[in-house]
Amino acid sequence: MSGGELDDAYERLHRMGPEYEGDARGNNGLTNHGPMAAEVLARRGYGDRIGRWVDGYLPRLVELPAARRPISAANWTAALGDGSRVADWVDHFRRELAHRPWQQVLVEWWPRLLPGVVAGSTHGLIRVGHAVRALQGGVAGPAGLDEFGHGLAFWAARSRPVPGARRPAGRLEPDRALAGVPHLADQSGLIVQRLGRLAELPGWPAAQAALRAPAGPADVPGLLERLVDAATLRYLSRGHGSPVLLVHTATAPNAVLHTLPLLPAELWAPSLAAVWSASAAIVSAYEPARPLPRADLPAAPRGDDPVPTIVERATDHGDEHVMKFTDTAVEVYERTGDPDALAAARHIIDLTRR
Image (cartoon, rainbow, N blue to C red; front, side):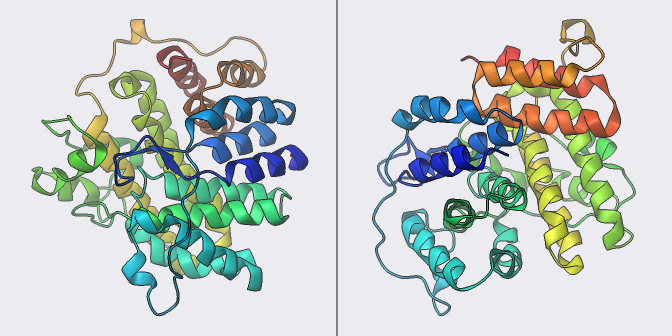
């Protein structure tokens, strides 16, 4: 991993807030993907491109607001889900990480934040997942630790639960469970408006419960892998419904999958349950009712080793969602050998404007 380039990017991006282009109160903004995209570039061997990519990305962002009042063990619950306190949360986690190993902070705060998994359209969770991968890969200096804290802060400030969440209690594997998620009749408005309709959606609780419950902690990683696989493959024929939002049906559970080994086994099943409900919610809110015909779908790159080809194409494209989804799709391909995973990556490249 290109630690120097990634640390430099983190330091530049940490002056900026986790969202931009929101309303006058800072709500309903777009997520700052800079740190996550930079981590993908570094891990995929494109560290020399990080600086130029950040140069082009920074102008769209807004500065992190000033902290207002400290968050403490006595008042943190009142600040949870308060987007106006994001800078207070950043300061809080900087203090936490200055005195304890980051792994301990993760284990303490993961179960506290997990109920609010939809925070920032799941970007709080995803940003933490990318930071964990960077730290595990050797970027453990101040910038890497600070990025981990920024991710936790964003998750805490934008904490939002899935309406009517249910734990898996059925018999369906992830591909069939995703296929059984009912779609909202009214798929209009912002994500907060769409998710607000789920509680009244017929079949919504049953669809969540239909996923097979893990037999025990050892069963959770495999279920998460199959959820990531299924969501990635569904994107190929359904990603056109919302090329950006539907990415997170795969990237959110992938973030949990990569964080899982650092968590106590008793947190594994609750983590699966939370991210499954989040992925299902996004499917319900954004996935089109009908898939595209197979004849209209792109094919995977050809060749003995198509992975470098699709990664290069995604990197050349430069869109943050394209790079992040391609990163996940490549992992699915390497795990399953299914070329449709790479075709899904090609599809987001075709769907997303530069």
